[in-house]
Image (cartoon, rainbow over all chains, first blue to last red; front, side):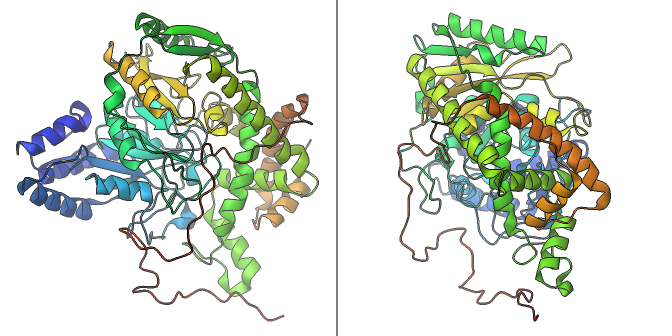
Length: 480
Length: 93
């Protein structure tokens, strides 16, 4: 059973009328995965037995006539840096290759409480460090639209699983664009909520001040359902926001007539793919036709975002990843040679090249003599980037940009040059630095049939407005 | 700022990483390029700017009572699992 042509709402409606059982659907999904995932390789671990067991239990509940939630029996995939009790959580790294999570992440548990069934854990760039899923310590995931191309990253497996109809929705994590960029490359909806909106408890930390969990789905409404289920305060995450959660689906149908859409000149750069540019310009035109006021705005510090990000993110990563030392988790090497040798041998054998590169860069930025020049300076520029947005949101309600400067690139195209890979995140990074919510929505295709995505950004905790703006675009003529 | 192979060795030691000799040169080159790129931040005068370490808005840092809280999906540590076996971490001099 391929999930591309059915929505969660329809599926739950069919369960309610007993036209279809959850067990049939989950069985069908695994048949589809057996067929498609040989070439796409979105999944690291499949949760076949437990998913079928949960499906049978869901069917039993449905048989009693109890009211169904919007995600009852909906098959979801989880990026493999989020914990699910009793299931491996590898982070795409050899260092956690044999690690089994002893507890479940809050966001995952909330999805399960809402009735969703976890079918598997998806591939990612090791510890979410990358933009193509080529840095996975396991294998490379391929873009379902063109198997020679990357699905984006780091949540490439989650994006590909939804795009290929192997999962109805998926969770990813977004530190510098790791949900929005693969969503754009794979032609699905992907959302990074406001920092603090979704609990990070049980998410393996990459850069704690930037990381945020969010949903992938093929439609805005499904994305809103998932976000509603996973959002909200969690006493297990000290950065979780105590702000009430809106009903994200209820507001979708409200008009966007009169809202102000800001277009930042700095996001339409030289060297941008002309088809991406044309497609995003058509989307802007569509918003004008929907009655929005289009206004040019300025975010003058945008050009410094990549540099700021790669100092802050790597500095935080160098500290967060210090815990992988052979003592508590997964791999252990050289334990006969004393403690320091065990640390070094374990980390040398367990971490891949990009992870080592980022730990080195972050350690360098924090080291004596360089802290003020690099790390502290980046924190100050972060203030300037945040204040750019604060000024912009005094003028406009949402900001519209391309999600990426190009469509999905070829496998191997950027692996030799880390800096060129970093620069592919140029449009998504500012949102994390400022803690804003952002969504990527498909807005067209290239002549080669590759998806193009546009990004919408809003002020903190304006997820409702963001989803409504995305939904009205989708409704007005599809994503094309 | 150019990163030398001995810089790589020094930082690797700080980070408890072992880097193979053949990787040092490549890493020094790549890190040099990245550091060169991030040095564009020097174009900005930020002497009077307050650093932003965390963007948590409209909420104060939440600290809960230090009590064990169990819920669905919680670890069995302390319940069925009482002890953890770890490698020897204290060595004789």
